[in-house]
Length: 212
Image (cartoon, rainbow, N blue to C red):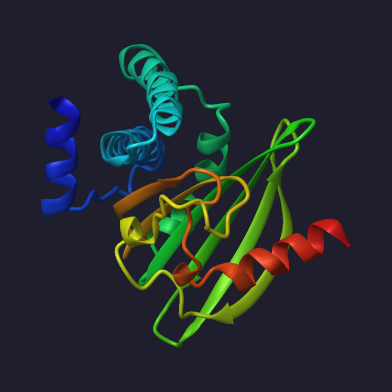
């Protein structure tokens, strides 16, 4: 019930974060981001007819919930990878006059790796992409490039596919900020992100850098 009320408040009044107190604003954004992620996972769990996928979503929900409840009642984990990313880029995200997307990619091969993209989209029809990889202790900038801004034009949930014909080979979370406000987040299980999202060229550029 509390999480449902949180989502309703987000839709009616997107969350704002005060730059005059960066630490307090950072902590609030970190916790709110986790709650929005839980909402995205709950939507996926409620909407899928695939029992294996539902179990995957529920497991993710339980894992995030346990940590979030502990951090709310005790102390925020300032070494969490999301917190470290926000700590480095909080001011740029919150002070942006346009849209900012954070795309989190979790790759599971012989080892788990994390790649995050921060994309700034403004009114000049050009988007700026910064790619980062987590080295176990901190986020390392690996790539910076510009691209056509025509991507993610619709509500994020419209890009979710149940038919496993999507373009993402890894678990992906996309979160949108608009003019400094956290507006929405969506979770995409493997091969569920529609090509209509317009991100294929960006993913290809990052992959080409990584594998060259």
